[in-house]
Length: 230
Image (cartoon, rainbow, N blue to C red):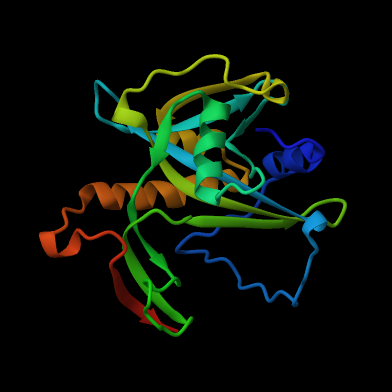
């Protein structure tokens, strides 16, 4: 669902070139002061990078949305509903804005989150196998000083062959046209926005997971390995 009241900021996010992190150009750490916001002054949103493999070629693809009203390429995202979990929001918003039925994609990724019941120092970087957690977070302050946080998940087209469902857009999403394109093309279309950085990270994670053939001892969801203690 689109986010009424935040269109100008969202457009600014999409159209303004943003320096992106890379192995050769890591993002500089930002030290944020302690901030607190009451419930009416923050917005939680969730979105996803939706994948499939091409039915004929088997090439990995990403679903991108062309907002024809703004002539901007975007990823599906939107605000969570009341009493809705963030992962449910991500799947719902992805379906509403793209029309493609999807589900969360379990993936191996680095995390600071410990396994249930395990006490680990927060500085320890772990590796979670088959994680369904968000792989990226966007935090920004809106024009009215409202804090907005977007949680990004990995999703996959149901059955890798689900048909697009027409008529699921809300009125505010009129003009959204979604399509699957090869991963390199998706990054090219999103160049100059922070969506490109998000897709690059998602592609790296999914390609790694597709190449990974876990042993039976590694197949349990949520298993963690210590990667680094900083």
